[in-house]
Image (cartoon, rainbow, N blue to C red; front, side, top):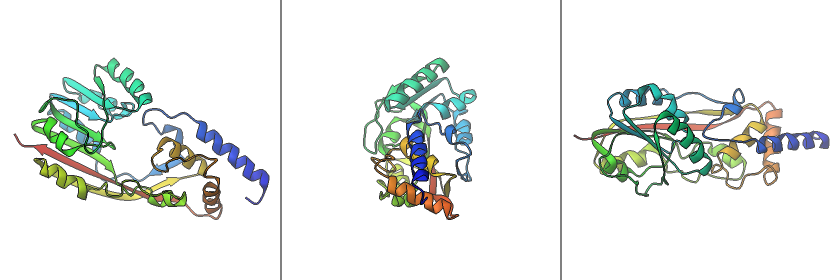
Length: 257
């Protein structure tokens, strides 16, 4: 790292990573370079079980539709999804239309209303997307279920700190959302939490990750964060792991019949 030529080579490699395309919610490009231990629950497996009991389902913030399409063999008669990020809207729209599902362009926040009539879905799925607890309760049909897997608000706080950033939603926890769902009138069926590590084999993988997950370090670019990236490279060269905090939680709730 003391060699200017080596630094220039690293910068060139990181810029290439920064320029790589990212669509949907597909991190296959980082296969073997980014990993995390898995939580003890099976979100997709539970979603499939709940689909078997439903006549209608909506997947909020579906990304490119990857996870919803992976459950294709379990779909109920009516399937819909929402997405708002323009590149994903086009991708998910094409994929889901080909499979017979509808896509609605809608913004998801903690207080945004959902553009649907009351009691119109037997199952609402949400994987790593924002949701309004009161609107979830309103849109669910009696006896319907809500299943969400969420990223803990402190996810990768130590990676963010290494780039002079901090979590934007540190209170995004089950302790916040489970009571809100209960106050909205839903019965909490289960809450599970998991903590582990998010690991990267090289700094270039971190560059790609931060460009894809832009809210982790707002304004991140290789140019603006060179100093931080070289510090991470020095950590790796010294034999330390590029491992950072990871946390997920799962909430399942049901609307009384």
